[in-house]
Image 1 (cartoon, rainbow, N blue to C red):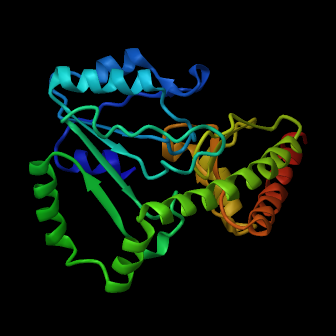
Image 2: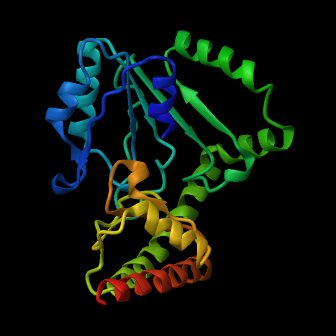
Image 3: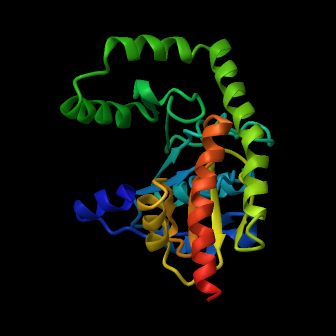
Length: 267
C-alpha cells in the first residue's frame, strides 16, 4: 500500500495496471500502455510477483523495458523473491536490460534471513547516489552483526545454499497447501505460485475479505492478508513458508473459521 501512498503524499498521480489471472498473471497490456505514458516518471513492478507468485515472461519484461525507454521513465523492480522459485528455472533479472532499470532486493525472502534487515539497490550511479543520500538522512547504518552476516550470506557459494534451502521448504509445503485448499470442496481455489512463499486464494463467499481476515485474526489468532488491501476483493493471501508443523497448525486454525463461515452461508 505504501508504494502508491507515498507518491500520492508527494503530489504525484499514480496509475495502475493489473496482472490478469486469466492470462497466467501476465500484464493487462491495454492498461499498461495507458498507465505508462509520456508523463510517467517511474514504473514499479515486483518479479517474482507478490502476491500472485507469478513470474513475468521474458517477452513481458522486454516489453515493459521498451515502453519505459519510449516515455523516458525509470523501471523500478523489486526482485526480493528471485531465488525462491518452487519448480521453474531461476527468474531472469531486469538488471542490464536498460540503463533506466533500478533493482531492489534483500535478505528477507529468498535468502530466508529477515532478522538482519539488510537490503540493497542497484541502478544508474547518479540515482543510487541520490538514494544513498536520502538513506543516510533517515538511517545512520546497519548494526555490525547484521552487516557481517549479510557479507557471508551473499557470497556465491552461500547464496546458492540459502536459495536451495528456501526452495526445499516451499516444495515441501506447497502440497500441504494444495491438500488443505482441496478440503473445502471448491470454496477455495488458487493458481499455484511459481515462486515465493505466498498463495493468493479466491474464496466463494460474499463476505468482504477484510471482514473475513479480521475474524481469522481475532478468533483463531492467525494473520493473513485481505485481497482488498491488494486491490483484489474476494481473495486472501496466505503464507506458504516456515516449518511444516507451524504451517499445518496455522492452516488448521484458518480452516476452523472458514468452516464456521461456510456453515453460516449454508444456513
